[in-house]
Length: 292
Image (cartoon, rainbow, N blue to C red):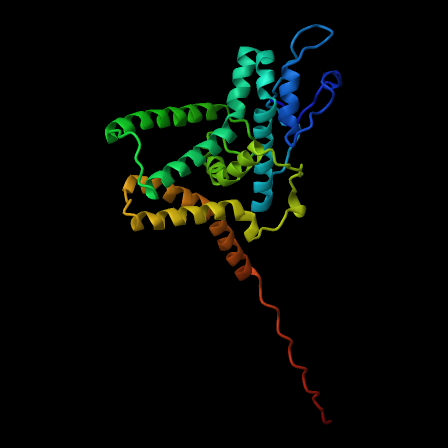
C-alpha cells in the first residue's frame, strides 16, 4: 500500500487515475485505484516496490489530542472507502491484491463492530436478562484460546521482519498494540460516522513544537463509553442480572476508556510538580553608614 508520508510515485501513474484521490486518507485511496489499474503503454498492472532503506525520517504525534486526531482520520478514511467504493475495485485487483486490501482495510471496521456487538450483548444480559446459546466453558475456552494463540503467534512471527529504525531489533511491539487498543472508542466513532455519511475534514497531524494541547474534551469518545459501561455495571445488580463472565467485557472496556485520561491526569500532575515556584523578591537592603 502507498504510505503517504514517504513515497515516490510515477507521475504518469497519477495522471492516469486523475491524480490523488479525494479522501481524508488519500494515500490508501490512491493506492487502491493505482493497483486496480494498468499502465496504458504496456497493459501491465502498476506495481509498488517496498524498500527497507531509510530514505526519509518522519515524526509522529506527541500528544493525545494529535494521536487521536490521526487515528480518527486513518480509521474514518478507511471506513469511507469500504462503505463507498471498495466493492467496485475488488474484481479489478485480482485475487492476491484483493485479499491483501481486504485484510489491510478490515482492522478498523471490524474492531469497531466487535466493540458495538459486545456492547449490545452486554445490554441484552445485564439490563434485559436475555441469554444466548449456552456453551460449556471448556468448549468456549478451547475455541477462543486456539484463535488467540494463533493470532499472537502470527504477530510474533511477523515481528522478525521489523524494519522500524526507532524500535530495537526483536522488540515485541506491545506498546503499539496497547495504543491501538486504547484508540478503540475513536475507531467506533469513525465507523458510525462513515455509516451515517457524516462529513469529515482533512486535518494534518501537528508535529513537534506545533503539538496540540490535551484537554478533557480530547477524551470525549472514551468518556462517553465509560459512562455507558458504568451505567451497565450499576444496573446489573439492580435487575439481579449478575454474572462474573458477563461483567468481564464491560469492565475491561471501562478500563480501556479510562486509561488515556488517567495517564493524562498523572502526566499533568507530574508536570506541575516539576515546575519550580516563582522566586520571591528579596527585600531591599538597608543602607549601611560607615564611619572613619
